[in-house]
Every structure is written in C-alpha cells, then in structure tokens.
Image (cartoon, rainbow, N blue to C red; front, side, top):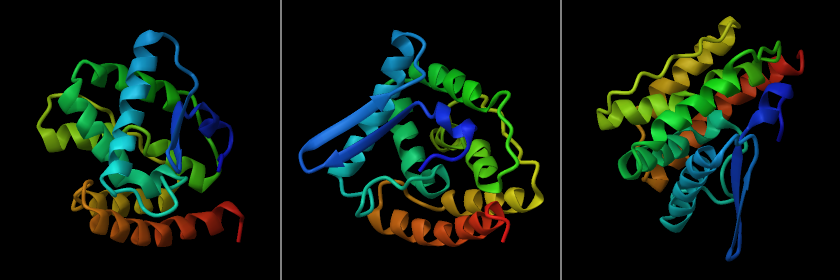
Length: 182
C-alpha cells in the first residue's frame, strides 16, 4: 500500500514467501546507506525466523509495524552502532520537505523516526532523534496513543506484537475514514 507521494521515498521492504526472501532497496545514495538498509531488513528476517512477525508478513503501514520496526532498530543499534547515524540521516531525508493533507499519510510521516528514537531510548544509547509533530490534531492524538502503547510492547514477543497490531488497526481505521473524507 502506497500512501501519497511522501511514502514513495520509503527506502526498503522485505517480503518472505516460503523460503524466498526479497529485500528491495530504493533511495540509497551510497554504499553506507545500502549497508544500513540491509542491516535493518536483515533484522526483519530474524524476526520472521523467531515467529514475531504476524501471519501474513510485515504490516503495510509503519503505524501497525511499530513494535517490529523498533525491534529491528534495536538489533541494528546493538550489532552495528555506527549504522544508527546513517539510518537517522536517511529518516530525516524522508520527512524533510514532505507535507500532505491526508491524515493517514501524515501519521506515517510523523512516525518515520520514532522506531530509531524509541530503540535508542530503550537501549540507553545517546542518540538525538528529533520528533516529527503532526499538524492535524486527530493525527497527533492517534500518534500519542500508539507511542504510549508501543512503549509497553516487547518487540520480540509474538503475543504482544499481535495485541499491539489489533489495537493499532482500530486507531488507523479512524484515520482512514478521515482520509477518505467520511
């Protein structure tokens, strides 16, 4: 699912079908960014191996995949701390100069840096990651509720990730109706 033009700069995604793993990388400017993207996507493959990813694969929206994204960033920060700065630069590029009137796209944009920020917080890594504040008041409320919930989730617990996903679907559905103008 692509959401507006701001989401077209999404750098990577991983898809598992049977024994085949596909990781596509876009918007990488140099080898260091390729390395950073692959490290993050490899963390998602490990999540698949450990059964953390819900049936059906990675959720299509960052808002739904927050625990998995945080878990991936934690693993990268632990194993490759030098990659964190590159991941931060890549995330900043995704949110800079990208505005949208669509509430769901605005939520996704405002969450780009959150997994890295929360992973650094959890691991007590001194990394300044700026917060991207949504302009739409309902988006700001949803973001706040999602972040409050995800802080209590163990990103390596399949049950906790599934519970978060169920709660987050309800939040995202509200914004989806606003996006359609309902």
